[in-house]
Image (tube, rainbow, N blue to C red; front, top):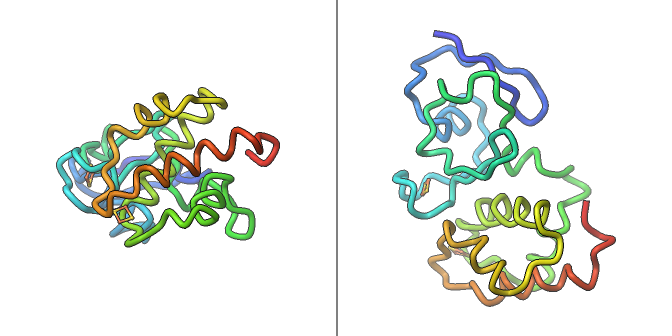
Length: 156
Ligand code: FES
Ligand code: FES
């Protein structure tokens, strides 16, 4: 069965079981491994992508349900030589430890900043409630997001 959707700006047609998770299709068929397969039960947020502008755990979304939708992964969020402001801030604040949570965090928090460019610390915390960091780098992640408040012009 064929499922057509937009993936990082390109139209793709997936030929396979529409019940396959979007996460597995992204990783196995399109070799987009930024979305991480960690819990695969919707708890950790490491697989977060944008579907029609909403941050969602791709492990819980059957690919058949993204037919005709627009999917953006961490690979499509910014250009390789022009990282998203959040990615630059994470690097500057030395946020990344093992890095497993990093793509999902960026996808969730980029959506938060899109909707609320000047979040409070509490709002940032709420914006990342669906994302777990096993290395417990939460405070540094929040610091990195808050640093963008002083540098709003750097955001895409
Ligand atoms: S891998 Fe999808 S929420 Fe954990
Ligand atoms: S940096 Fe390791 S899980 Fe967050």
